[in-house]
Amino acid sequence: MPELPEVETTRKSLLPLVRGRTIETVEVFYDGVIKNMPALEFCQTLTGQRIEDVNRRGKYLLFHLSGGYSLVVHLRMTGQLVFLGPGGLPGPNARLVFFLSGGGQLRFMDTRKLGTVHLVPTGCWKQAGGLAELGPEPLEEGFTLEAFVGLLKNSKCAVKSLLLDQRRIAGIGNIYADEILFAAGINPRRPANGLDPVERERIYNAIRDKLGQGLQHRGTTIRDYVDGKGERGDFQEHLQVYSRAGKLCQRCGATLVKCVVAGRGTVFCPRCQR
Image (tube, rainbow, N blue to C red; front, side, top):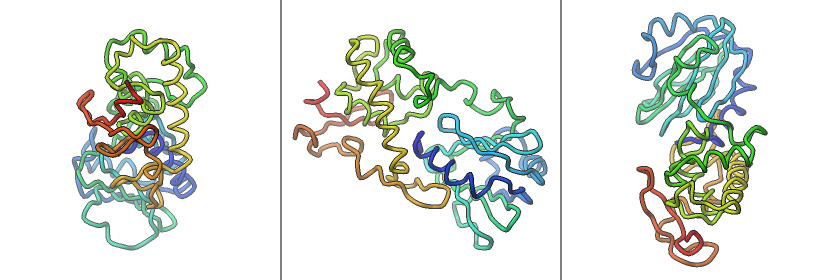
């Protein structure tokens, strides 16, 4: 699933390509992707709207439109949002195609059909899935060590479960949670409220460090993720534990172990993350 670095990279790559363009027509190939209105109403409402800006909140992309609406997109597991020039067939996995002024196309493709799109009045985020319930952005200045410690102290759940909870911290998913906890030297099954002050600070610093690295490398492409230009990220070449179960720890040489935490496959080093 695209996480904060992948969604932010997609946003940055799309912004100069779509901002200022008008949505001339919309073609819907799978009605189920549109979650809060019939497809016909969706297409009619979008027609003639100009894309004013593209923002991100957690794992959501927000396209702010000239008519007071926002298009809210969640890529889920296999979604891709790619800008292409004029012409060309939509392909078997195309779910929506937005035909833009100047001849460009913005295509929403999704192999597993799990992605979601909401069209809501700007600011009415309670109408857009779980957008209104998101926790703080972990790379913003307001996400302080003190704020993070408060989240940990009030939770008895496993620390990895807390990192994955979008209502507590927005944007972290399975890939970066594994990498964060390895960098911090913390076992993913440790109770969040049982960590000492030094451990809390190590996790906090690792959150900012690993998400920052993911952004620098333009995201992690394991299978499906590409940015708005259709280009892959390369942070997968720098992963230390995620998807490496059974391989040797790059830090100590122990065999990496896989378990399940919060219903998600989790890889960690039993020696470095006691």
